[in-house]
Every structure is written in C-alpha cells, then in structure tokens.
Image 1 (tube, helix red, strand yellow):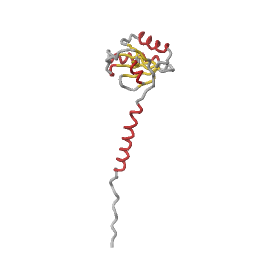
Image 2 (cartoon, one colour):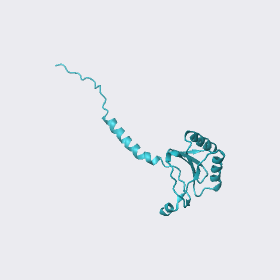
Image 3 (cartoon, one colour):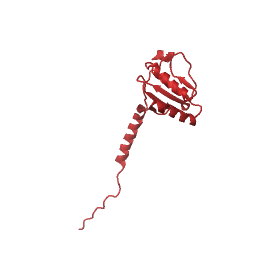
Image 4 (spheres, helix red, strand yellow):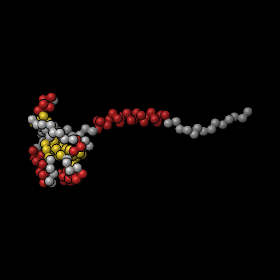
Length: 143
C-alpha cells in the first residue's frame, strides 16, 4: 500500500493579517484627532465682533508665553517657525492667495514686545490684512 504524499500548501492564509490591519486602522482612526492639537495659547478677552473669514483664507501666527512663533495656514498643521522664516512663508502664501488675512494670536501672558515684533515684521514686509485674535467676553464668561 503506497502512501500518498501531501503536496505543500501553496496558498497563504491572509485572514489573520486582515484582522491585524483592522485593529491598526481603528487605533489610527482614534488617535489621529488627538495629534492635531497645537500649542495652547490663552487669548486675551475683548468686546469684538466675529469676522467672517473663510479658514482657507487665513494665516494664524501664534506667539506663546516664551515668545516662540507658530504658523498655521488655514486648517493645516501648526509649525514652529523663526522670525526670518515667518515673513518668507507668509509672502509665499500671499503670492498663491492674494486675499489671505493674517491673524496674530498672542497668549495673554506674553510680553507685549513679542506681539509688536510680529506686527512690525508683517508691516515692514508689506503684508496687508493683519489682525489680532481675542476671545469674546461671552466666551470668557463661559469658561
């Protein structure tokens, strides 16, 4: 009686790999919104009106308590930037989109000289439509 030899299995079972990929997908979907948080800047309060500006037409320059500058284009990623790089990046964006508005968001504890430095840099570079970001008094009372 001759014994039949089994042929080696030529197919790879990919079902366990699909399970692992699904778990990784869920983990990334949950963790991604947590990674988009930027630098915490506590804005000063003022009685101002809400501007009707599209997020894609804004550039936000944040100044934290240590005087470090951060740049955000529209709803994009927030990046730390130097004084020199700040004006250069905004000028490049201005060439692409001439109607952008630049908003300066300075922490309420930041030294005034850092805010004035940003405003002077933008003014000397000839960048129009520069504004200051604040919290409304109603928003301040809610928190």
